[in-house]
Length: 303
Ligand SMILES: NC(=O)c1ccc[n+]([C@@H]2O[C@H](COP(=O)([O-])OP(=O)(O)OC[C@H]3O[C@@H](n4cnc5c(N)ncnc54)[C@H](O)[C@@H]3O)[C@@H](O)[C@H]2O)c1
Image (tube, rainbow, N blue to C red; front, side, top):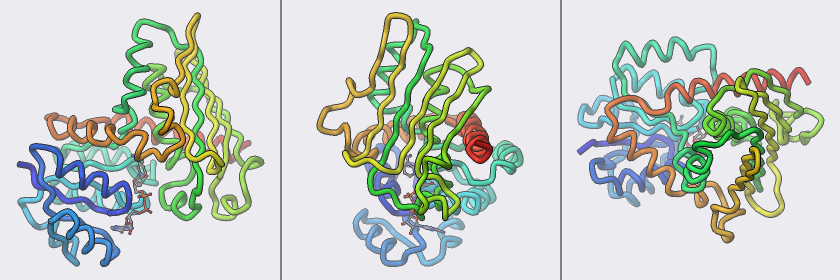
């Protein structure tokens, strides 16, 4: 049995707590959040322990697996601590806000023989798995990705790295996965589309991004922090004589629902695969995506 702890207990952390309880070979032993009331309430809900001191949980040799589900601004701190104590790590995307430190981070992971997973869980979503199977022997030429959210909070977006790190991360990764390639040309228009509220906080609310991949696949993205219908997430794949639309694979009743409902099973599957695997999961993909985020941001600032 792998004993575990979840750090950061908002919606995403609670999903992980549930999944650790559901998995046969893991147990949820500790939860931690900087919010005292929330960590006590969550410990009660999941019948596990909490502590006022994170160091105390760290020092507990029995606790092997830690899930980082706190804001992205805190990832670097927790990653360093967990590596120091040689823990097994499931880190919510993105890895951290500082891409310049990625190389030394990978070195530390290797030197300390850390088993790590970056939570690119969308790859485990039913709809996207079906789409990936459908294009197995086909050549995708154009990918269109739309992600619009409703009731977005600018401060939460900033805490999680802004529009491209927070919202874009999964979609840049999915585009690489569907295209089987990596972008070499990126054009982003964001500033003139975005609202003052986001711009004042050094973030964007809206963006249109075009990418050309090394294998000539073209990817078009529309991101927005605003959608009257609810949360919209739609991916279309085009090639000679075919068009595959993700809306066909989602139930009609959940098309405009939150990502945590729409992709509920994907968090469980990603964690399950990682726990059963004897090596890292999606680390290279996470690093690659982080580099794409940086390039998109640079392009947004340029244009
Ligand atoms: N895989 C996905 O689809 C997905 C979806 C949403 C968010 N995320 C990622 O999950 C992470 C959390 O996102 P969120 O929107 O839930 O964040 P959030 O800002 O809502 O905060 C999450 C929780 O962390 C707690 N917290 C804040 N600082 C902390 C600290 N220093 N130590 C411990 N706990 C702390 C907060 O009290 C809160 O309960 C981010 O990295 C985000 O990118 C992933």
